[in-house]
Image 1 (cartoon, rainbow, N blue to C red):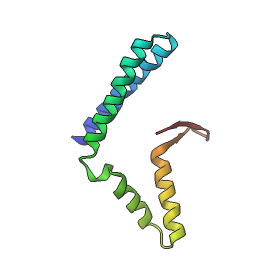
Image 2 (image 1 turned 60 degrees about the horizontal axis):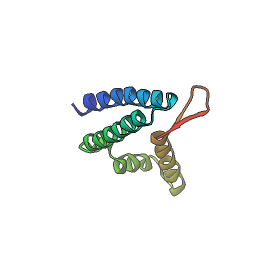
Image 3 (image 1 turned 180 degrees about the vertical axis):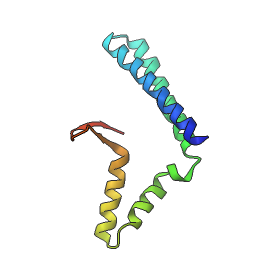
Image 4 (image 1 turned 90 degrees about the horizontal axis):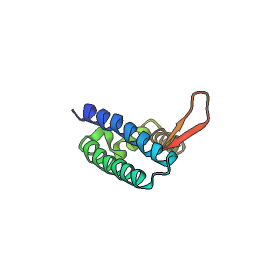
Length: 100
């Protein structure tokens, strides 16, 4: 259920983000504040939900990544990559598109 609810939160976040960006284009400050508050609240609720499952916690994610390394340098390399996976997105073919 956590996976399904998380996906629903994510889908709804996309809708809210679209409405927020529409408010920016229309220079509608009250609508922007309303939608941005909604998006922030949704993020907090999603964080609470996902925090109930071990596989969504940062600590185990990093520990699992470091476990792939056999030397300190390799462990650091895998940790750096694990952190990048959850914090940056690239467009197909390269090019940074967003930050987490």
